[in-house]
Length: 340
Ligand code: KG4
Ligand code: ZN
Image 1 (tube, rainbow, N blue to C red):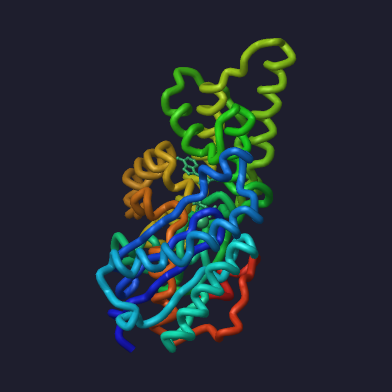
Image 2 (cartoon, rainbow, N blue to C red):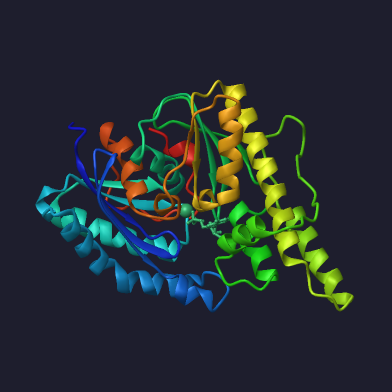
């Protein structure tokens, strides 16, 4: 099987309709993202029913544009990849139906792809990976530490016990009256702040790689309530800075402990929260001090996009592991089970 295959990848797991053409799991020929943020902004979060309807409206034109922009014809494609899960079931379904139809029409293999494997392999669109490596996955729905002993084999050693880190960012931002998605607003406010309100860190058991952010989120909400009861405005910037400092401290410390314990040759940062400037800076500094190579995709490949799905689908392509046409969207799809 050639490893220079051309994969069309489709991603509709949440609130972006994205289609990409990726060669050999490494080279992006096109990567179109139709974002629905403006629609969901007014509701303060993603409304699943509206998300699926917008995917339906955007999917065909986005597929056409991705092919045109890549400068290829449909007959040049080797396979069709699509996010199978995790995600919103109604949103996943739209991408899956589109992928199946095209795979059937062109008689091409279909590759159901794991969304988090996509976030991790977004790093391979930038640089070749070496193994073993550790990935820190930080997104709106996920916070995980994943060990990759070899290519395409995933072992989760830590995960959040409550809120995902992006979810905590969005909830804190909402309480501080920022629009959805709030992560970037908190990031900016935190970096510009002069003062910091010291907030707790959830280390959990000494040997645990798990995370917990709901206590921290509650501490921020409590501080806002207290200010309100006193008739004072909340100290938004100092709270944002305290919140961000707590999140980063825990993420960076646990990620580096995992790198050393697993003998990892690289640390891969990925997911929407990898766009956080504070996190990038702290992780960068710690990794440099400890001699750990750190990979971080550019911002456009951190948030949901289809190129990362094409990069992960390449793993399955190489092993000839294809999906059948009765593929279903799986909101709870396991990353470890998806390993090659
Ligand atoms: O990976 P992603 O695009 O979607 C999911 O699969 O969840 O991540 C979106 C999340 C949102 O919660 C958003 O607030 C957060 O990433 N995010 C950030 C930043 N940019 C995006 N969080 C903190 N700081 C940022 N700069
Ligand atoms: Zn994502």
